[in-house]
Image (cartoon, rainbow, N blue to C red; front, side):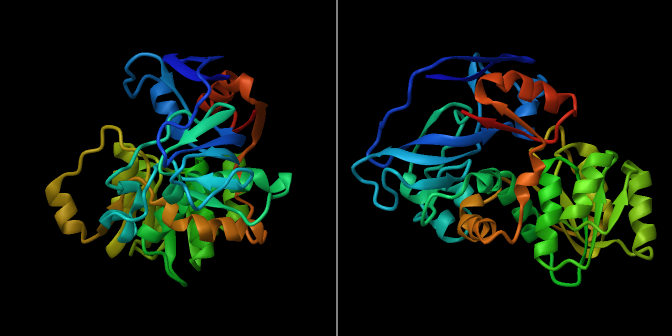
Length: 338
């Protein structure tokens, strides 16, 4: 088969690779229905995250089970499945406490931008649907694998409650789906921070009540103005930069909650400011597997349509253009079909 490989910053190739097979009795091999490019893929693509030689890419996936190892019991060939970007056994102490993305046996999926994918720890990682979904639901189901699950964690970790005021920092796919998640959790006011009209429009469609285009100190001041000088109950940081993190912390009210789900690059916190901010901080790699059954159910019942974050759809062999479009902000998120 052919798959996506990053050779150097800006150098994405779709080239021959070995077709995955069962390596451990707990493995499954799936045939992809769809995969995509993630905002976090742009960090190494832009040279902001080091890679050690040619690197297979992709960690978001859904598709049909082709083969399972002898120890797999929860899924079987022919079923449609969605899995997390982090594998999990669902039995270790971290999984049982609700953090499967910190599983003692965790592996990160890295080869999903290809027609086939080997998934370790299949029983604890994959969730099967009762029947094959209709094609129009595939994009939304794909989002549950990462960006919706991560946006949901952003809202959950920021303690979004009915009636709350929430601020979402970041207008990528995760930020936009954090808006959707905050709406689902009952936030009364959702302030999306965005400078891009198309993303602002989608944020409003997902539930944003206010848009703030300002950044940094100016953005914080605007949040304070909108909240009567108090700050927000919940702030969802969905970028991963120093500016976005500080903007999030400074936008929260004393006693407020700040979640951080953007992969951090160069983020450093100053102890004294954090001490006097009186905010709760909670984040990290999203425990997507914890949320998957619920999110899949919301999609299948058509209560949400997170697949709208895909504004570019390409054949998998045109993956390089998908990266370019997202890097140049011509696309929010690229859907890839084998």
